[in-house]
Amino acid sequence: MKVIRVPNLLEGVNLVKRFGALTAVKNVSFVVEKGQIIGLIGPNGSGKTTLFNLISGVLIPDEGRVKFGGKDITGLPPYKICRLGIARTYQIVKPFLEMTVLENVIVGMLYCAGEALNKSRSEAQQYLTLVGLDKKKDLLASRLNIAERKFLEIARALATKPKVLLLDEPLSGLNPTEINEAKKLIRGIREDFGVTIIWVEHILRALYGTVEKVIVLNYGEKIAEGSLEAVTNDPKVLEAYLGEKWAIKG
Image 1: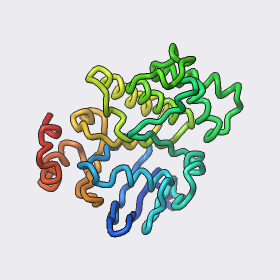
Image 2 (image 1 turned 180 degrees about the vertical axis):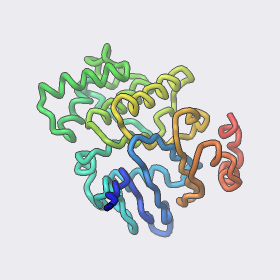
Image 3 (image 1 turned 180 degrees about the horizontal axis):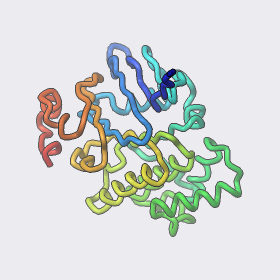
C-alpha cells in the first residue's frame, strides 16, 4: 500500500541571514503543522523578527529554504507570499493614519486577497466586529490608541484570508485587561478560522494555555524547542534569559 505523505504546512530549512559581519539567523530549521499555535521567543536581538522577515519575503535568506505546503517560496516577494496565504503583523504598527479604520482593512483585502470593492467593504466590517472595532469603523486610524491599533493590525492581516498568521509581539504596550482580550482573540482566530499561528512574544506567561509548542532563539540560533514548560526549564534557555527569570516564572 502506497503511503501518501502530506507536506508540512510551513517549513524552514537551515535558514541563514547575514548583515555584514553579523549573522542574525544561524542555520535555523523549523516545522509548523496545520492548526498549531506556536510561540517564538528569545531575548531582544535573538533573530525573531528577522526570521519572520525571511518567512514573509521581506528579506531573502543567504542560505536555506522556506517551504509552504511543500512548495519552495524562498525569494518570492511579500505580495506573492501573502496571496499564497501567509500574513503578518508588525511589532510597531503603522496604519494609514489619514484613512478610516474600515478603509485600512479594505486596502489589505484589495492588495492581497483581490476582492471586489463592494464585497471587501462588507467583509472588512466583519473583521472589525471580530476585533471589537466595528463601532469605530468610520474614525480616522490616527484617533485610535495603541491597543486599538494593535487590534486593527490583526484585522488587516485576517482580511487577507491567511492560512498562516505571523504575530510579532501583539501584546506589547497593552494593559492586563487588553492582554486577556488579545489572547482570547488569538485563540478564536485558530478555532473559528482554522488559521495556524506563529506568535513572537516577550510576555512569556501570556503564552501559557495558548501555545502547543515554543521555539527559542538566542543570538540567531535555535537553542530549544518543545512545550513552554519544558523549554522554560531548559538550562540553555534560563541562561539566555538571565535577568529575565521573573518573566519565565511569572
